[in-house]
Amino acid sequence: MATFTVHAPAGEIADAARADALVFVPEKGSWAALLVPFLWAPWHRLWWVFLGWLAVTLALEGVDRLVDPTLATILSTAFMIWFALAAAELRRWSLERRGYRLVGVVEASDVIEAECRFLGGLADPARPRFGEVVTPARPRPEPATAPAVTRPTSPDLPPVVGWAVPKPGDRP
Image (cartoon, rainbow, N blue to C red; front, side, top):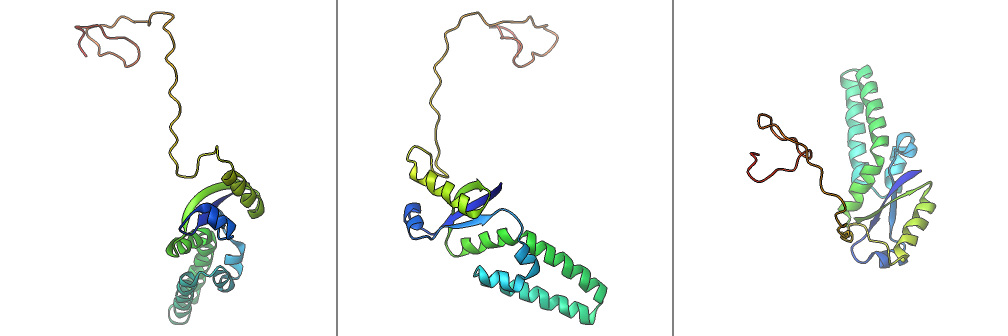
């Protein structure tokens, strides 16, 4: 099971669902971002991310030519691994910049199941919406059947919270 975050543009969630404007981002690294990052970022329309990736890649090429090829290889490998692991977060950041907002979190095995679960929950009017504060019903007070157990306290020791019920005149 994977966790997906659901993002929608401004407006009603139901309208975004009807317009097929919901975006489901998996909470995991991306193999495509590791193997072909120059295609992965434009595919998801992450233009600022692509420009950042390109700038870092060119800087690492400069380190390779001017400083040390071994250092450039180590830095390049570390950057590629970081980029693949941060791919989902970079997608969420880009969606936020475009005005999308987080509207839900879904656990599912793939994106199709995540979409079905989210839209099924959206159709259920009894379910609370993401971010909605639901106050639970107040429990009824139970009738006192037995008196509270009190333990004697020594005047030399401080009371232990929850062990003794203080009597009027006892020191705190």
